[in-house]
Length: 542
Image (tube, rainbow, N blue to C red; front, top):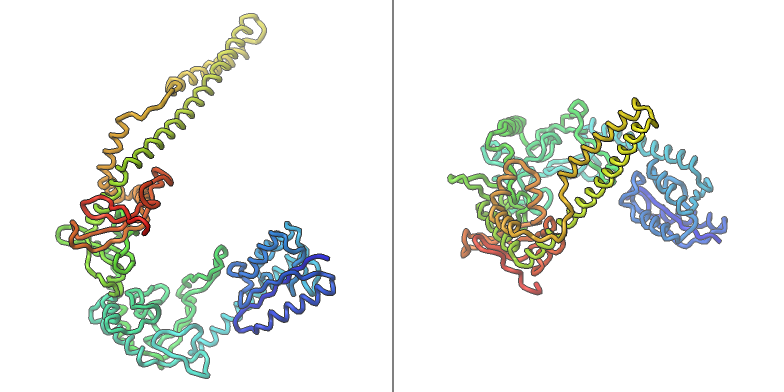
């Protein structure tokens, strides 16, 4: 008796959970009639058939298929497996390769033709449903109803889907944001004030500048939302599914495809106040030289705040032209307990001091010497092999030239034919000799020249200057080199230290030494580094 597995699926939360039980019962009855022994069942609840990603039941089924746990897969219909042509064909191809037969209750044994037809029908059905949903949403929008989620400042009207009403407590916050922005405050200032006053944010734990600013092209953020001025805009973006991840991503639509409907009863701010806010945003959007993209620094994207764990970013320069950095959470939302700034060059010095101290450690230098020797041996082997090939070819060409010359001298061939051949071979011989002059002779024992270690020490002394110049000039390799050494740098305030800075480095030296880097510490760089000092090894056992 063949072993059978059953798969069932329903699409949305709006469908009945009994749909799974009904599908399983139908498939079990089919298996009994066909003399199949059901050994496993798999299901996905409230999962779309438009993608195989995110469907744990189907993925588990495929894992068991690879382990040859069953011989036949039974489904109510092929669209339970997938409504996507590519995915359905892929499932059929993989199961067929494993020797597993697919059977649909109402259609019997599945073949390639049926997979193609049902895959096409399923995909067309899914796309048709999507068009009808969009058509229904457009009709609701034309009536002034909402076709999406709930916007901050509004609440649902019970018993009237799509209808919204102003939530006065949140609407007061919206008016405050617009008023303070028009009066000259920045989104960051406004976010700080709201967090200080413990105003609950629309989502998340705190207000951020991005909550207020949003994106002008997508109409996100409080200041861009025209619903607050009594204009409902629909179809700004379209949602498409990434075929590689199965996730829905948004894409902006051309302005000509937007649907704009006046809903004056939902206006929270006056048109004059809304327009004044847009005018200020437009004026601020003009790129100022000081706001242009700055060159990357050696620790760009690697810094973390020691007080809260958030990232750190540039806060501009002071009168001495030194760059200051600050916790991004302190800047954007004012939620960090340490809002003060640090000098970037002080942090960089602490990090580079720690790295150079590690690189001078005897065990690291020993690893460097070993790596150097291995690389020299590899290069020497390549050189020797190349020279051997050239010498072998030189012997062959020389013998061929001698053979042609002897043939011409003895009158065994046509000089008009053999002469040019000899000339061509002679030119090749000259090229080989010239190349042999450039290839070093075979090497014996390889020793590390003292100048190499001196050069190593010199490069360590110039590490900070070289990296800084390279990154500032746009050399991406310098930035990548730093990322091969360092993964994160957590910055702590330490008044008793030189420069008031203490940093914790997490990273690795795989670029130079592979997994053998920092043998006396944790994998990669570990411990605390302070400005003007070296690395303090981490406490054992912590």
